Each structure stands twice: as C-alpha cells, then as structure tokens.
Image 1 (cartoon, rainbow, N blue to C red):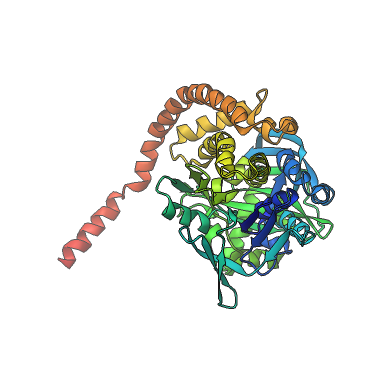
Image 2: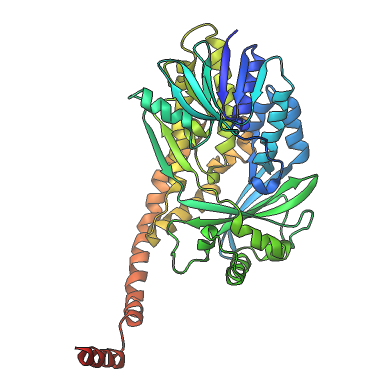
Length: 466
C-alpha cells in the first residue's frame, strides 16, 4: 500500500487521513497547532448535513453518532428582513454543532489508529520543494524539520490560506487560482450556557440583517450564539456593523454593541453577560475567501481538498460538508487507481464539475451590490426560490438533502431559475428604485446645501481673513 502525508489537522484533514488509513495506506498528519481547541468560544456554529455525515460515517461511524447525539436537529432556517420573516427553509436533516466539536472528534478518531496514522502536532508547513520532493516544517520551539516525501503523496488540507496551494502555484504555471475575499466579516457572541433565549426556538436558526443566531453544544448543555455580520457595502460612518472590527471595549462601544444586538435580535440581549459584551471586542473575527482553482492536483504528488481547494462562504451551508465529501471522492479515486500514477488526476476529474457548480452559487451569495434595485431583485428571487419545488435550500440542507444529489445537478436547476426570475424581478425593482431615488433627491440636496445665513457668515469670515 501507499504512503500519504496530510498537511492540516482540521476536520477535512483528519477525515482524509481516516479514509486513506481505512484503505490500508500509512498516513502522517502534520498540524500546526499544539492542541485541538475544546473551548466553544474558539470556534463557531455549523450544520453538518447528510452529505457530510455520510462521508464521516463511511469510516468513523462513532464520530457520526456523537455528532447526532451531542448536536441537535435543525428544524428550520428563518430569514428576516427587519422584524418580518420573509422566508423559511424547513430542514430536519441537518445537525447543529460547532466546527471545533467535529474537529476534536475526528482528531480523536485518528489517535485510535496508531498503526496507520502518525500525528505530528506543532508542525506548521513553511515551504515545499517540488524538485526534491521535500516539505519543510517549522515547530513551535523554533526548530526546522525537513521531510523527504519522494516516496509519498501529499494531501493539502491546510485551509483557505493554504501554504500548499501557494507552492503548487509556484511549481506549475497551469495551476491557476482566484481568491475573492468574502464580502462579509463575522464575529461571534456566546450566551450563558444553558440559558434559553425568550421567544427563540433552539431548533431553529434565525438569520437577520445583521447576523444570525444558533445554539451549539457546550458540555452537554445548549448555548445560544449570535454571529454578528459586517458587509463591505455597509456605511462605515453610520452602520453599527462596524463594531465587528472594533477592538476597543470602551463603555461607549459596549453600549453601542448592546443597542445593535437589541435592534437585530432583542431576545439575545438578556442571554449575554456583561463580561461577554466586553470579551466580544478581543475575540477574533472570521473573514475568509471564495477560492477557485483550475485543478486540484500537481504532478501526481500533491492534491488539495476542503477550503484549500474550494473555500466557499457560510451562507452556502456547504463549507465543511463539501470538504468532508471531498475525502470520500478522493478515497474512491485512490482505491480505483491503486498502484497507478493517476489517482490525483482522477480525483480532479471526478470532483471538478460539482465544485465548479458550488463556486457559481458561492459567487452569487458573495456579491454585495450597492444599487437598491439589485438588492431588492435578489431579495425577491431569494423569497420566490425558497418557496419553489426542489429549491436549492431544500436540496442542500432541507428534506431532500438526504438524497445527496451532486452539486452540479442542484445548482444547474437553481441557475436556470435565477436567470429567469431575477431578471423578471429587475424589470420591476430597477425602475422603482430609480423613481424612489429621484423623489428623495430634493430632500438629500436640502440636507446637504448650506443655508443662506451660514453661507453669508462664512463669506464674511473668509473676507476678513483675506
């Protein structure tokens, strides 16, 4: 059997190691962190759908069962525009948990396979030499470790800011990458453990204009979280969302944060402790990117999976799930071409159509139009599409998610609906937005034009100075 090196000990890297070990290969997994965090505040809420659970269950059924037992079934996602609910996506097949919990359980599963999987923590990839087939790691104590990988294949699972991907670009001019930063930035607030949020159903995820709420498991108890959101299109001088980037926990900023929370999710105000409101300003923010690669392998020596290959963004609901499914497709490619020299190319060929479709969907969601007419057209399309038969939500994380249909099949149908419906919506929303702009223009000019008295006094002042 073969030898594999996995770079990155996140959920996808761990599952890739388990998939390869299950086939009888020997795997060495390198992880830059010194431990897998167990503190929920160092993670964020996610939903593991049937696609992701199926990939886990294929080699780690105990982990899949823990996700089911410790997490909770998400009954629905409710989307609000202001205080009004505009859309509801019923689910019942997705398990709410945190990324940290999934990572920890999969890492522990790897530790139970010492005969096949060797774990190396505190090893952060520094560089790769494609000619010599070596990988150089830096350890936390400052030492340098050079690994001879001439007789091994490398799986890059080191996330959206992948070092493996960077060196693949340098080694192969045909390996093209487009990285588009998210239009949104996120920071998470954590409620008191075990305390309910009045009026909120813990089985429902609520999506508001400034963030979303969800529950996670914390030591066997439910804990509400509020993921606050800042969009690039938000007015920097007016919008409270700028607090997402604020680091000063002054009394004024804490008061602004509390007022902002009250405006988007009033039920969360009493769930958050005063100390948590202060901690918010020192907590890390999350801002990734949509990553598009022209292929996933180079020289049959290196292949990318997960966010390193195709990072999307949270609203797709497919970030971790698509990465977990990657490992299943990779294992199938390796198994079908055992001993051959084309397993990574086979993986790229099998996976690319679905990932290209997922990119199409992610790119649409990542857009941040400034024109009101376009924003309204997209909202109309979102509402209409969510109510349609076989909507993208129903197919990805709704009741029909159990079928685990290929992304290409799901997104192709959604793309046709978008082509027809969003253009039909634009016919209505664009002219209305222009009319509204024209009607509001005199009021805007009146507010921006200085009064005669002010102008006269300014003129006198200027004349006196001259």
